[in-house]
Length: 399
Image (cartoon, rainbow, N blue to C red; front, side, top):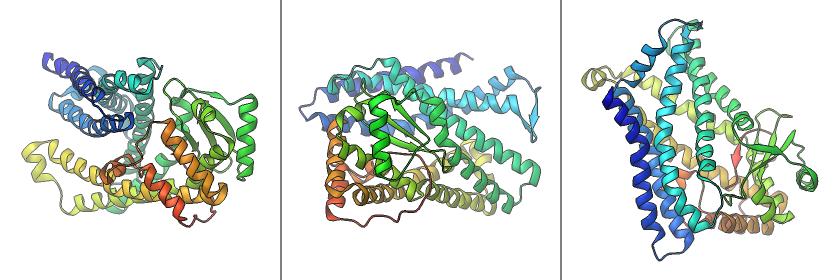
């Protein structure tokens, strides 16, 4: 019990101290602000992947889940053969433990970010941002896993059922995730002259979103926009107040066009197909190869570590490569609908407003799912063909 408690405390404290020390060193470098922020972002990308893995390994090694389940008990309702209270406890404890080092990393890094960018957001706002992302992820994963177990309970666990169930829960999860932004993100309805301005620009592009909302970005100097929604007629536009104040009409129209380009290209569904293909292949491979020997030798890690290896390849190489291509296509769509010069100006404005480095390595751009701004500007300037004006749906950030 004492060891588990010490581990949980260390998950919060050690990442905070480590990133605070690294951030202080980065802050003292004689480099442009964009380069120093880039260094910090690279470290956060690594930490954002490695720290949850360490947390999950410790979670199971120290039997924290078993302790939580013992506290919950074995009673409670069942849904599709799934014990609701036990399943809820596993999801809540797992994501709660994983969130601790991410919050520590964010709080350790933020004083340097605030100093370099002269932002005014409180640390609590930074924590709320991490909690919102983890909340969206937890609900998406929880719904997907519950659906998968329910399908297995009703239809069995044959290979076709497993593949079909995976496809069903992935597409339900991807379809649901955009709307979770409405629940977890701090937002207010866009009103007054700002609403009239955005409605006019959306109408210029041929879109009439169901709702327009304003996200707080002034205190963090975050210039961003996204379009959320997978169902035609139920799509929403979110913009930060900082974006509205930083961009003129031509630039803002191009940024909105980029987001609508993701919708037109059905990019979210492309990511869903890739996800089904990768993890469907994992299911097939596990069916024929199995992990019995590994699990017998090292227990839970015999399954978890190979799975995380696959996830790293999926997230960085495969999904990262697809996302890079989609960003170029969405930029091309924006150039077609809003004009090439306006799209280049919008990209430059985003880089300046967010203090983003214009050049970055391939691995970093794959991990962040965004090509460097400099490459995107060059692609638009070279006139890559715009995508077809098909209708789809998704959520995507312009950052």
